[in-house]
Image 1 (cartoon, one colour):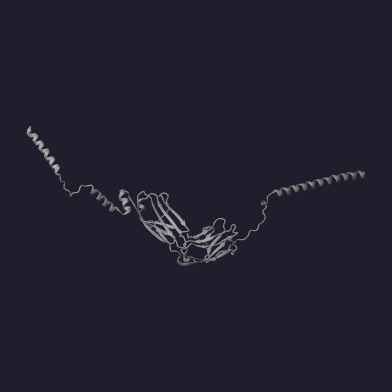
Image 2 (spheres, helix red, strand yellow):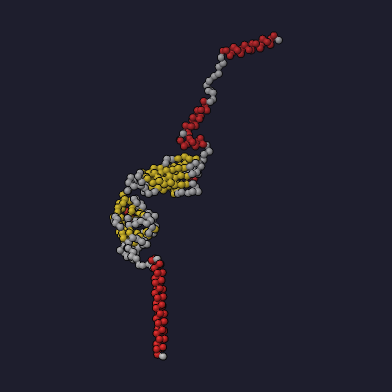
Length: 321
């Protein structure tokens, strides 16, 4: 009985051991399969902490000097900017001048010189004035206040350039004809930034409905800025004094006269200043077509003899009848 019982226990233990071994092997297979599946997922699903380098300023001039009226450029180059923002401000004031590429203050002379994906974040001040002189701060917006760079601006209170400005001469145009005015501003050391147009004191801008167009051309080599004012069809109200003004306040003016065009010949001569001469020439021509009042008509002797002979012939024939 004891031997039989012992054999039964041994058989039971052997079956239990086999079951446990099978379970372990299944667990190991499941674990391996799980590891293989996890290994197939890309690394981006489980990003690891990466080190982001801090922004840094590249070398650049810290002291700049410009003449009054020039375009002042304060350089600032930032490396490893990332998603942060560059801010410009005057050192003595807390309110910023610019943030990124946006101008914060109400001063259209101030703008940022930046090319996308570049390190340059230059502060540009057009028509710089002596009151603009001072210390400026280029700062990277961050909790760390050490990310800043100082640039000192000095402005000389003398004219930077003697600009020569020229405009088209006085014009006479007929109503409906085009008007074309050209203004050239040439600098000695640098090219003027812009040219504005005025008619009778009112600023002239492009207007597609009126057919008014402003064309601008820049020649860096010749240091010349050219602005051309075109009006497709002149109206009577387009008459007046036209003034072109360069960015450094140099001006030139001309007059435009719009005529009704009722007498084209008169208008043609007015354009050339020869109306009086033309009328005199016309009068002289008409006089030449008339017979001279100082000449007396005198028939020839042959004509008188022929006339008398004809009369005598008529009288003689009458007597014979």
